Image (tube, rainbow, N blue to C red):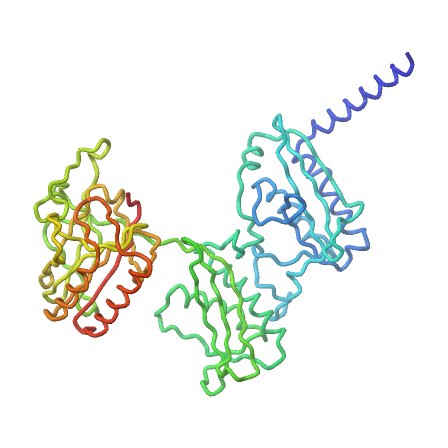
Length: 496
């Protein structure tokens, strides 16, 4: 009986202890227990003296470049508190300001991103509206958890914390990696990151100092030029790189280039190359991933009167765009390749009518092509579907419109396409124009080799090696008649 009573007492005490633990809120535990514990550990344990720390979100004992909004908030709170402690060194990370300069000096501290310990926060959602938080320290050199450095909490979370727990976001401290790329509004931060990486590579080499030209864009800047200039500005006050306006002193060039990886994901490289390949200086580079979304613009609603378009330096074409027409019936008119079609599909009663619109500097023969996404390149033909190539005559400074299927665009959004492609990532339209009759006949013969599209439905077109060969011959024709042949291209989105 005594043993039974003792067991009941133990169970009761355990229940009370568990209830007390569960009654403590996450924020209360963070402020009242975790922060004081971490401060005490970092400032009193000898192993952390003069060592570098990095605070990360973990999953299955490994750092991750993404995590829940709640876990990242807890991590940031711990990191900020540790950064304020005397004698504690937190490594420079991508979301922290600055380029890694030594305090009070114009020099890079290339050890600021090298951590000796990881302070990891692992957060898991549990049943019944609860969560579990574990905080531990990992010795990177020994690849082992630090004995005695561990804190754990389990209990209920609020509705707001639950939403944050289920909201997975990129960890900004991993900015620039593939799984946590920069975005195109963070150019300054990305430039600081690249400057830091490139500057540290420059300081490690011993063959000599790199001297590059002082940038002078003369107002003609693009995104790549701007980023290279920002990187250079970050390095201009350090000894990592020297700039000179004297061309006789230059021994290297600094360049930037973005390579498309997938969709709007790019890998951006900043490279310093020696002017002479046989010199002692090596080529050095730094890279980061960035998302550069395509810039689409909405089609204009134009009146029936011809628009006065600004002049262009183009050889033949003045403009090429997508416009929204006033009347849907214009997309079904006799002159359209989609004549005879209807717009009685359920749910499409209010679909807008769009057209390709071109304007030429002189009278010209124009050909319209369509690279259908996943279906290949076709030439746009009349609705009678004759084998002969359909060309149109554009009169000087007059708008020529080529109606598109009523259901081909949901929004009419489009952007300038930079070049011809064997496999574009969007539906693309091309116009090729010639102001010379002989050149137009050469184009017409070449266009006849393309499969024709003469209805609203997509048709199998030229793809792969066949398209590559066709484009190569088109390039030769355009090069031969370069003074009288011009072309433009646009990409559209929301294509059925």
